[in-house]
Amino acid sequence: MQFRIQGKKLQCIRSTYDPATKRSHQKVVAAFSRWADKYSSDEVAELTPAELAELDEYLAKKNAELHQARLNHAVWNATRAEGELAKLAEAIGTVESLTDEQAAAIWSGLAAVGKALKKAGHPKPQAEKKPPVIAGQGDLLGDGV
Image (cartoon, rainbow, N blue to C red):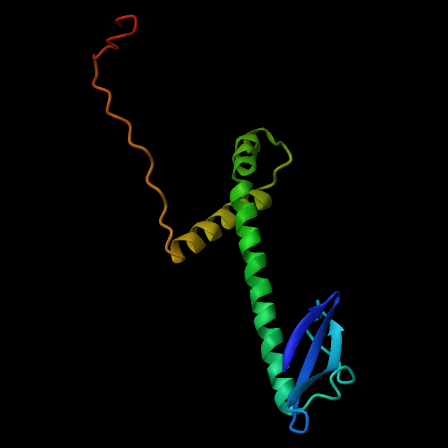
C-alpha cells in the first residue's frame, strides 16, 4: 500500500499486478483529510486487515513526527522568550498584584524546568567567577583610592 498526500487529502493506493499485461495497476481505495489522526470505518471500508494495519502504522509514525516537530518548535520558542522572561523577573519586584500563590506557582515552574533540563543531560552552567578583592588594594588606573 502506498500513501500519497494530494492537496488536503491523504490517499491510500493499492497496487495490483496484472499478469496479462505484465503491469501494475494502481487504485485509490481510501481517502480522508490529511490532518486527521483517526479515520471512520466507512472511509476505509475497502481496505483489507493488512492494509488497515499498515495505515495505522503510517498514521502513528506521522503523529509521532508531528508531535516531535511541535516539541522542537516549543523549545525554540522557549529559548527565544528567554529575554522576555528576564525582563519579567526584573519587573516582579514592582508588581503589586502578585499573590503568594502566583509566586509559588512561578517558583514551582522554574524548579520543574531546571529538573527537566538536568534530567535531559544539560547541567546548570557555572556562574562566572570574579577575582577576589583584597582589602586595601586600590584601583591602579582609577583615582587611587
